[in-house]
Each structure stands twice: as C-alpha cells, then as structure tokens.
Image (cartoon, rainbow, N blue to C red; front, side):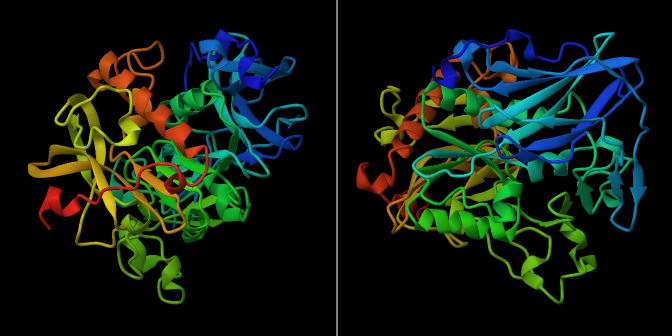
Length: 461
C-alpha cells in the first residue's frame, strides 16, 4: 500500500510542555538518507523518557504516522548551553544520549517526540531526505531559517538575551534544541503544504536548504521545486543551484514571502549559520570574498536582489490585509469561481512581497493578485506573480507569508490563524492544488498558458 494511504496516529501532538528544562533535545544531523543513523542529544530533569518518531503527511487527515519508538531510558540533566566567541553563538554541547537508525523509514519530514514519564513533551525535527528528485516534486525544508529564529539559550540572529537586536548572535548553531515546542516554523509554515502534497498523491522528494548547500543533486531532473512558507536564509550556493534547476526546466513555487532575502554562510560542516546582517563590516570575508559577505542579497557588497529569481521583491513588515485577485482567468485560479477584485481577508501578512520595476525582474511576468496594503504608515501593494523561464519552467510567488498556514486555518491545529476564514482556506487549497498538479507534470510552458505581461498596466511603469 502507498505510504500516504497507511493508517495514521492521531496521538502525535505535543500536549504538555512543562518547564523548559523538563525535556529537550536535538539531533546531530538535520537530515539523513534513508537507512542512515543519527545521534540524539537529550536533557531532562525527570527520571525517564522515551522517543517516538512520527512521519508527517496526510494519512486520512490524522497528519502523521508512527514509524518507531524507543524503550524507556534513564534521563540526565545536561545543562543550559554555553555562549562563546565574538559571534555570541550558543551551543549546548550535550553528550549523545542514543543513536537512532532510520532503517525502514520512508523519505519525508519527521517529528521525533520526546516524552517523560510525567507526560512532558518536546519535538526534535528530522528530514529523511531523497537522494534523487528526478521526475518528482521536491519539497525544500528551510532548516537555516528555522535556526535563524531559534532563541534557545537566549540568542537568535534577531535578539540577544537582553532582547536587543544589537546583542544578537552573528552565527547560530544546530548544536542546540529549538525553543518553544521544538518546531514552530515547521508546524506553521511547512506542514500544511506537506499534508496537501501527500494528500494529492504526487510523486514527492524531500530535502533541506542545508543539503542544497552541501551539494546534493536532488534537484537534477526534478519536475518542480517547492519552497514551503518561510525560507528567508539562503547561501549563494543554494541560489545558484535553484537557478540552475529553473534553467533546466524545473518549475519553482515560492509559497511564502521574504524568500532568499538573507545571504548566509554554512560553516562547521553545515552546523553553523553565519549572518552578520547590518554588522557586515565585521564579517571576516567582507573584503576578501565579498560575494560571500553575509548581509541581505540586495545589499552591498555584491548586491543581487532576490527578485531576479523569484519575480517579486520583499517590501515590508508588518501588514494585515485582504488578498485581492487581479487575474481571475489565470490557470492557477481554475475552478475557484473568483472574479477580479474578489478579496480574501487577512491572507496578506505578516510579511509581503511586491513587483518592483526598479530592480531586476524576469519578463514577461503576470501579476495575479494585487493587494493594497499599508506598512508602518506607508501605502504599497502585495503581489502574487507568475513568469516562465526560457527553459519552459513556470515560477509562482504568492507574495504573502500566510499562504501555507491558510491551508490549515480554522482547523484543530491552527484554529485562529489571524482570523482567516473557511472561505479563504478553500480558495488557497484549490489554488495550491492547481499549482502542485500543474507543476508536477514538467515544464509549465509546454502545457499551460504563457503569462500575459501586465506589469505596465498594473503599475503604469
């Protein structure tokens, strides 16, 4: 029986976190190939714990299947991590608690749940990645972005322990747990797309941003490459790889906003994400290898705005606005019944992108949704856009950070979701279904209508 048709296990969710020290853990690898082993590092203030691995998917709506469970193991409190160096990097440096083999585990996205005897729980993420994506739709998990926002130990690429930007880390390590339940970025911005793609029965492959940087050729021959929801931190190598895939005919979908915005380096065999941002003058490579200096892709030195690949350009934060349909006859909206001007409240937010004719932008490009927004008192627009490359590849960008989570809005797992309603969820689900099915069949330009370049008509520029 196909993996997606197997019975799921509804008991995969974290129900009770307890204190931060109750139970936490991390893997020594963000991803493995099927059958490979990885080390799990666990700290707990309680007596015993066990580990259960859940593969995330559709599974008839239960969303996960249990593939493995350990026995009960003796717990150990391994401390709260160490802050070191001019980069203010936190590392846990915990001893390995157990080695886990993935023999028999299917490719996919996993959450390992840690449970204490007293019922306290946390997640540890793992991707069992695909060696090849040829003929398949590749789902890319944004592991560098997960880590950039991770505040475990008091520090992220945004804040220091005192809550100030100025005291933030300049490099963050995978050698530590994730904060909160252990996996908020995946659960909100990625899991909904995984569930829909598996529900549709598409041939899928799985990888991470870290693996694309490490040189995996999983995108070779891929039908489509999907960036799921919040994939902000890219290396120049990842950008080259994705551009080459597009130029070889792989369709690209960017379902979030603010994608490919920060230029980072991966060091320590992929376990360290370096990003100096506005302190780029302190980056050791800023003068010797300026193309690797870790700041925004659009910033000096070696400015290279993300719009040349994605078609849209990050424009701001925060916003909350309706998503307004501009081209209802485009194939991506087929069967939705929308008309020009139809609006879907709260779908644009909290970050957004727009078409900007002052920066490099592929043409012909069609603006599919054109949504008025006000960002910190400044009027602007959020745009969903579509273009095709000379290779025939289609490229879609949603222009909003909330696209992926809308797929589960008003459900058990995302009951509030910014006030997004069931009508909006149905619209985004139908549109994303059209996109995934259309892109799964190979270069879009060979089968689907070419974009009608409307940028001048929309912006009169």
